[in-house]
Length: 203
Image (cartoon, rainbow, N blue to C red):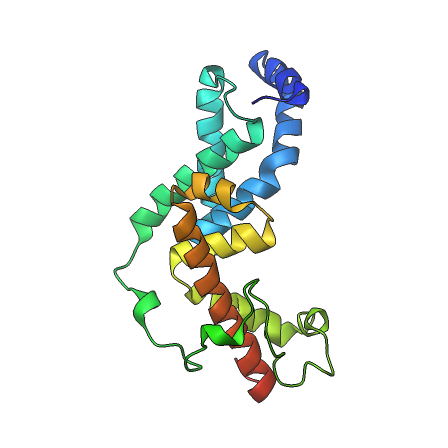
């Protein structure tokens, strides 16, 4: 449902107030960019957001306020991203390929997804400190890009944007159980990358 701020902003937008459009863009551009990146990656994210804004302008007068402005904007962005992804999709099922670092078993993790036993050398460096290292950050970005599209989408929206699984399910049109499986598999692969990097110094 619309908040009071949403209602006021929507009235100004429908009246054609330019400052209202600037407020809308500055408030939601980052979140829209994140949704686009989660689905299509960095290469096409800007194009997706541009497409989404065009759709917003075209459909603003028909927005009925059944959801918040943010939810409406992110849904439009997700739909634009999914359409772009379908155009660019290649028939390669990476999810079925073996991990380059071997199998990471579920029994290495607690139910909350954290390590039962921290990876090698973490007694010297905290995970936060490790993530500041350029090499590991680049390695993690490479791992993210190598994930199957839905796994990457769910992980980025959950971990980077802090969206609740229910909201992610609505954006991506997947079930809650599917979302949980996808984020779990993605976390396993990212954890495997971190452990391999710590043990070998290589991605």
